[in-house]
Image (cartoon, rainbow, N blue to C red):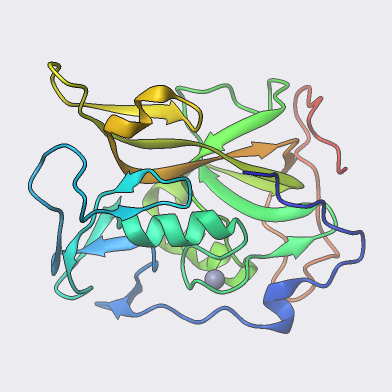
Length: 234
Ligand SMILES: [Zn+2]
């Protein structure tokens, strides 16, 4: 896929012009659109089927049944909704509306991952994630409600986004199925049942906090610590 086009300086902040819809709530807590529910069920494990959905790159996609009812599965992305939101590269994972866009890029909020280099202290040009971006209001909401994000998170503005890989179960003939991430040009994609599109967030600008909800352009601050060769708007 081609990278998301560069964002023109002064481009309108989409979520301010067109508010992102609020998601449904469960016991008062907003449930991000991307999550699966107990009323939805994955298919029986098995190799790719002719009846599976296909992603835009032709990868067969895990096709769930049911409806988003019952209780939310707080740690499980619904494969079809993850595909829809991530493939757009500019829709909020909570409400599905426009993600927060600034002249420096789109807003991402990611849990800090100890398994990967921390872009606040280590120069990095790209971060891979299966999480779509967020609108500003839902980013603030997510930080309040999500335990992982409340403990420690990365606030990023990303000028260039490209879908580069798929995560899912690979059923190679004669081998045990295994969960893998395969690049979009990998020949074994034909044996994969995809569950998540993976985006590469290029040249991320690290902020030390979310922009204010009332004056989103007034207090954008770069994180203070560490080398950041990537920390420059393009
Ligand atoms: Zn939103």
